[in-house]
Length: 161
Figure: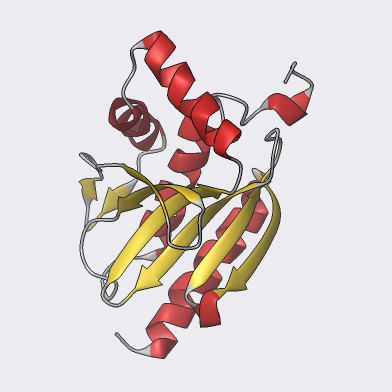
């Protein structure tokens, strides 16, 4: 994938994130391969990201705070909901599409990365060369809508922590 294509995708997603008003600061990092969007109201710093790695595009929620990650897991355990089902609902509600088809069936990996960040991550359909700005930005917004209501991700919005 050409660096111009990656730059165009990342710039478009960053612009859509800024216009949405759903995030705190929005920046581009990782040598131009990552859009970083600060969570607006979480109890501890967290960021939503769109990451291009090789020929793949991922959407992520990343945090250093173990308790914030645990609060999301505890919420899901208490409600019996699955992250994948909640994300699917948001993707449908936002009408996120890739190549004319609804984006569905995204898996969510949850792990602690090599740089010791707690990460929720989904690979977007297709390859980096054919994931459009609308698809990547839509998946980013769906991640925010899904995770923003879980655990202490909205504690900074006036709720008790």
